[in-house]
Length: 146
Image 1: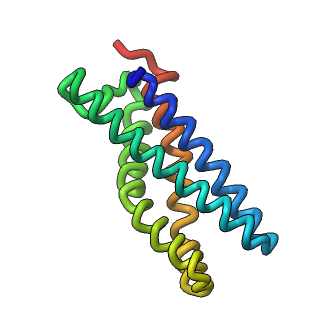
Image 2: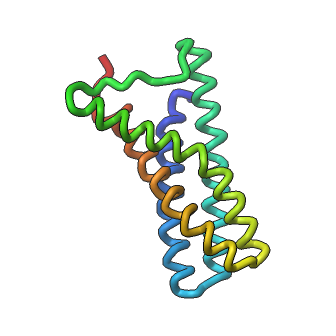
Image 3: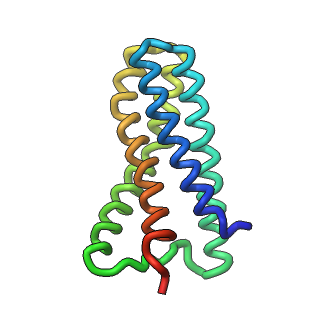
């Protein structure tokens, strides 16, 4: 069962992506209450993702002695994968902090401060969600493990 966590994590990242894009369209349409509800949902989905991701890392450690899955791609795909992975990991480390600050300012209706940080949070969170799905496909679907 725990070996299925990467699939769940990819699904949660894809759901986050959809929710973020939907929330963006809602706020552009000035549908503040709906935007708020969708962003709270996106935050909850991302929180479940984080718990599942950490459980997956623990399971990997317990079963293999390593926290990481080996990338099986060769040639040009190796630098492509590792460039994507490095940017994903570095930015992913910022998302929880950015999301909590942005969500807090939005919930308190501190609109100007919320907008300022949301302009940073949204593209970072979206990039991390999309690249999380790409990392999954590169690790588990597109390249066969040797």
